[in-house]
Length: 119
Image 1 (cartoon, one colour):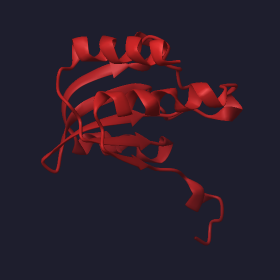
Image 2 (cartoon, rainbow, N blue to C red; image 1 turned 60 degrees about the horizontal axis):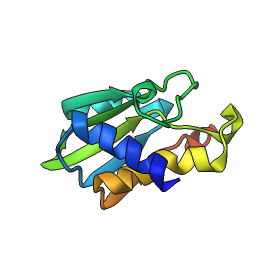
Image 3 (cartoon, helix red, strand yellow; image 1 turned 45 degrees about the vertical axis):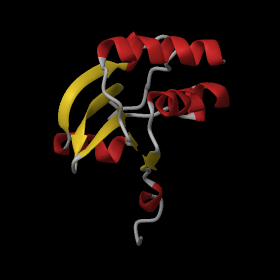
Image 4 (cartoon, rainbow, N blue to C red; image 1 turned 30 degrees about the vertical axis):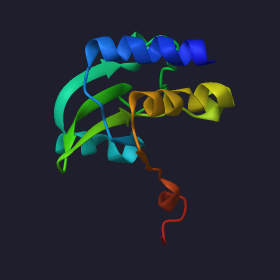
């Protein structure tokens, strides 16, 4: 597993040399949140070694590096789900990669509030 993480991290660092402090994982309802980020670099998931590719509609499938609120951030525009056929190891792989890129804080979004319309 560490070999795969290292390969992904090295690939990303060749494209983006900054060190993000915050990771943000966006679900389908927050795809437009990337408009708030001063984007420095985008990397499609399919280009990153060993990275899963999101198949859910509304998930653009890119790592987005930039600045938000004076902090360097990396946003995952789309995430991966067990119901897509991915293993637990594959689902957490991107989070491990983010940690090795240097993030100290991880923010996750989800659509749990949409399960019950009265929320």
